[in-house]
Length: 225
View 1 (cartoon, helix red, strand yellow):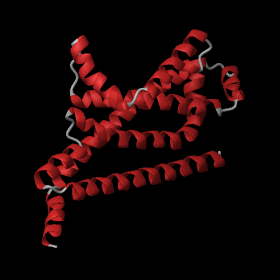
View 2 (spheres, helix red, strand yellow):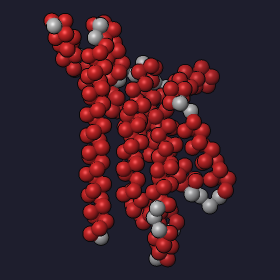
View 3 (cartoon, helix red, strand yellow):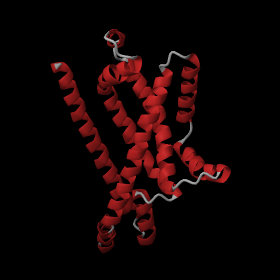
View 4 (cartoon, one colour):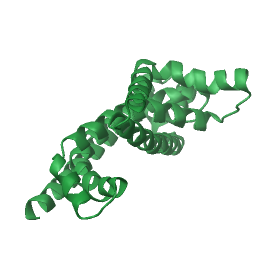
């Protein structure tokens, strides 16, 4: 019994280190998601382009990005680019880019689905009042598509947040890295990883809840409009 209490006391005493690791996990997942949104929007636009070569190129990039395991992509970016092309990235940068590429492939499909869901008459009306194609897209189509995109984008982010747990293998001091280090020294793997699991469950539920409230608010605004 005393040993059991001691093990959980180790977790309690390690909360500052775990909290710092959680902050790094959130930082790298948010940077990765930002890159995923940028990549996704670019390649979704490519898939919807009127130029056949651009559509084919975008489809190829998306399919390849979705096919490469995040673990392999992470090693390829962090070690491969350094050894073969002398491109030296920090572990944080490599992790964020890997998450961005993986998430970007999924966000491209999310953006494409959201944009395609908007009636084509919206674009035609925007062009009829004198807006250019890009302005019609950014001012008319995309704002409406955002309501459809948000719930799926949250799912992508949650996936990236969980995927971010493997960045510890290249030395990013995230929460998993901290938990592993402490558990090896205190022989408390069950307790440390249980604490990490509880933290991720709480985060996921909180993010899903905030997304639900935001989606509800946006839909209410659409009904009133």
